[in-house]
Image 1: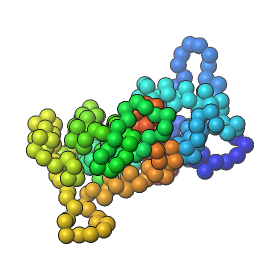
Image 2: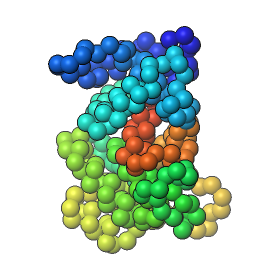
Image 3: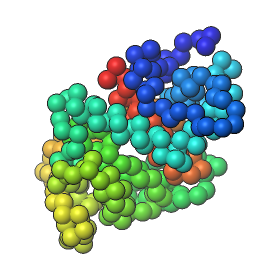
Length: 263
């Protein structure tokens, strides 16, 4: 590297991540690229919002960087790294690895002009683009993410993202309560969660008599997490052709946050 970018991993951060990086596959050409430089390039794209082709020349070739990013998205490496770091972060905060409570919220974001797949219109927010459904624990750490068209309603998206959470297995063995806002209120959704997963849905409503900003119990945690994501320019708008790529960038943003805290 000829320049130290603010998004680069420090030595302590790299030492945390290095054991989680998959080893090179057997057979074929040996791995020649510096994986730390590849991660620095991916975090540069995430934080600066540039295209892959416009990566600075002191990073590895952009095709190599994108190949690592794509392959590790497909084989689940990014989620695996994310989940390990979340477990360490919870232990660091003297919490059990498995949370007992989770919070759901959604965020509608505009999509770039060239994005046409899975794009819809959110009439409530008056946004044409995509919707991010996040489930977080009480520390604000992400459990699972779902990106859909903005036209998908809260209850349908909530069911899909909770299915992802359930597939985490023992990692959510203690989970018993799901906190939601008024968009998820109603017997069909609440009864569905109880019948299939034995989780209790607790609705936190905004007081009608209060005006302006109101700090809502439990709900503020997921709102803070959504605020963390705005620190990454790549996430200020949805530029990705595939919703799965958008989900991966959210996991990467949380990986960057957690590894900096742990280091």
